[in-house]
Each structure stands twice: as C-alpha cells, then as structure tokens.
Image (tube, one colour):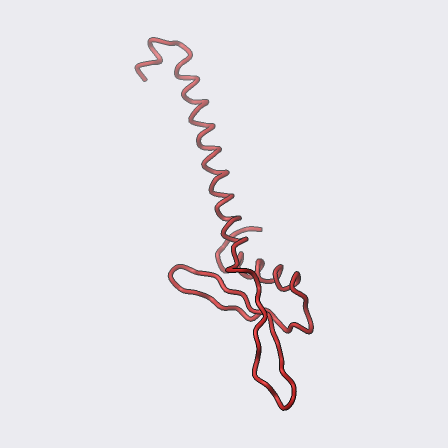
Length: 102
C-alpha cells in the first residue's frame, strides 16, 4: 500500500476496516438465510381433502421455492396439530430442504 509509507498507521487501519467489512458481510449472509427461512409464502395454510362419505378432512400445507420450482408440502392433519405446530414443522422441513442450520 502506498499510504502505508506516507502514514505509518494506514496499513493497520486498512486491515481493521477490511475485517469489519468481512464481519458485516458474514452477518448479512446469516440474516439473509434467516429471512428466507421465515418466509413461508403466507405461512402454513389449511387445505380441504376429499370428502369421504359425510365427513370432510382438513390438513396443513406449506409452500416455498427451491430454485426455480415451487414445493408444496403436506404437514399433517388439522385435527392432530394446531397452526403453531404446523408452522414449526414447516420451518424445520424448509431449513432441511434448503440446507440452512437453525
């Protein structure tokens, strides 16, 4: 660096600034992964399964993108799990599918 010859502290300051920029870049990547995990295309949604006799069955679904494809995932019965449990299951499945550590 030319500035290191002119100002003795310039090289040290440049390294400090570069380390700070690298740290901020790593934090931004981590936040980007977290934001992607939080975005579940309006969260789990309730879908209607076919009618069997006089009964109608409902189940939880979630949707997210993997590359250029949309993935629809069946999470389970609405009778056996509530919306919060479905959301947690969807986040875990999406993290595994995208290779994001939770």
